[in-house]
Image 1 (spheres, rainbow, N blue to C red):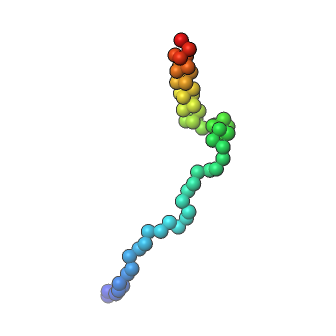
Image 2: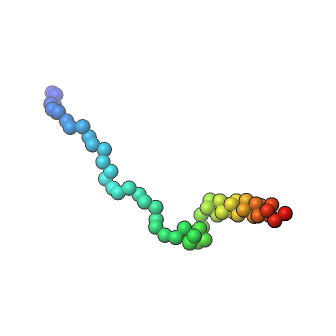
Image 3: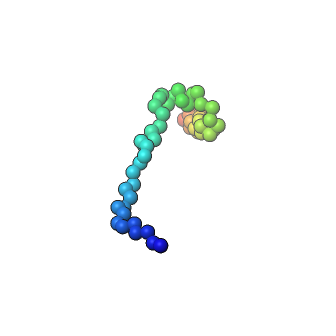
Amino acid sequence: MAVDVGSVAPLQARRPFPARLGPKGNLVYKLVATTDHKTIGIMYVVTCYVMFFLGGLMA
């Protein structure tokens, strides 16, 4: 026994939900109040490079 489906329209790619947007807010506050270890590590490395550069300028 065979089922005749007929012609089926092609599927349209649709997004069932709105695109994700990052949380709104102040970047400085997010950096100061973070508890994420990766963000803290990046801030630590950036601070080291900035201080190394400033020390080189003052030498």
